[in-house]
Amino acid sequence: MDKLIINGSKRLTGEIEVHGSKNSVLPILAACVLSQGENIIHNCPMLSDVDAALKILVELGCKVKREEHTVCVDSSGVNGFEISDSLMREMRSSVIFLGAILGRTGKAVLSTPGGCEIGLRPIDMHISAMEQLGAEVFEEHGRLHFECKNGLHAARVILPFPSVGATENIMIASCVAKGTTVITNAAREPEISDLADFLNGCGAKIHGAGDSTIIIDGVEKLTATTHTVIPDRIAASTYLLAGAITHGRVCIKEIIPAHLGALIPVLKQSGCDVSVSNRWICISSPPRLSRVKTVRTMPYPGFPTDVQAPLTAMLSVADGTSVVVENIFECRYKHVSELIRLGAKINVEGRTAVIEGVPYLTGASVVSPDLRGGFALVIAGLAAKGETVISGVEHIDRGYENPEKLLSLLGADIKRIKENGTEKK
Ligand code: EPZ
Image (cartoon, rainbow, N blue to C red; front, side):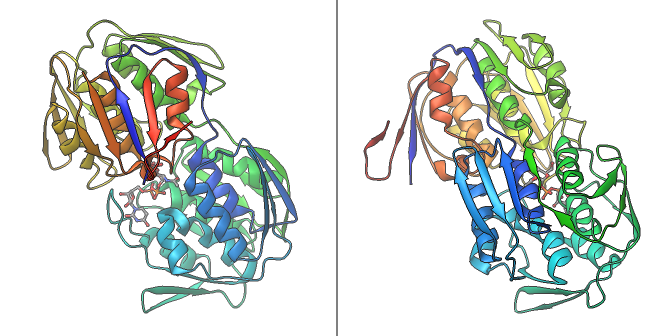
């Protein structure tokens, strides 16, 4: 397993671009199962979660070709409807393939999701929605079997919570359901709109994506299209926070600033100057950050749960006491114990973290607990005095493309040491 070694207290300055959105490309790759023919996906990030999704596509009978950030998925030959247990375990979010497999083949078999690092990750809303669309489901030996003998039919689905994945599965499956499906209390994340754009490019008839009511008029079949994935708003937010904690001046180019709407006031409250154009965001951070009042994670357009861990790291050296409330996942504070090893003073009670800003952090050896918690440790290491060694980097590689390269471009003293002890150049 690779390690990252950071020699901290270096001010980050400069400008970078971030990769395409992981949470957009994963449902779009899943939807390729439904859109028959050669789908061309541009701005596809090079991430291990994407690699896992491509393996699932191949397992289902698709032909996959990748050239750098462009992936071609030919789904003409789809002949499978099962996702193996091993691939389900490789990528927690593979439930996102359910709607596409069911819509294309009329059947689907996948594993009940084990928990993951940030919570139980139940899929009750996915199951209930597929039943409302006409699927029958039973569980046997940890595997879920779905079948819709007479094809899928439209439904009016009311989500008890604006689940991103459930919204995506319903949107995909109902593209080829008979009749008009209405999703109420749908998730509004930008990744939902990007998926809808992809599906409409394949001939679907989806209206209202990005709002809390989405209407899908079922069509006979979908045919392949070419699509460019939106920039990754979570990665962009993460690198801005890395700039902020190092009192740097960092610009993230070629993004959609509106997608980071909830982060900007928090950066300003912490004392950063923030300038925004239609394609980039720049921050200039003061010598000493200030605490922010309570930040609550909420469904979009609220503050994103995926930025909670990176923000907690930044606030660990802000003057005063900040409060963060994690409302989306039940145990998304595994990074806190590792931040405390670096000298942070954070107290977690239930869903609330009380962060007492310390004058500085000091380098240590820490272990990345999960994807976003892992990058929180990188952010802390960038500010810490001395050397920080982060293991468990495979978690970070799930959602951030080449982090050490981008951070080096901004002036960080960071290197990746491969398992055999050699430095990755
Ligand atoms: C997506 O996960 C993202 N993953 C997550 O990003 C993100 O944190 C999350 O949305 C919220 O924005 C991808 O898009 C691949 P949810 P998803 O369904 O769809 C509960 C990252 O770091 N729930 O909106 O799984 C669930 O347990 C990842 O990039 C049910 O109870 O999120 C959670 O508490 C992490 N039953 C809440 O709803 C269900 O059937 C929100 O989950 C489904 C969800």
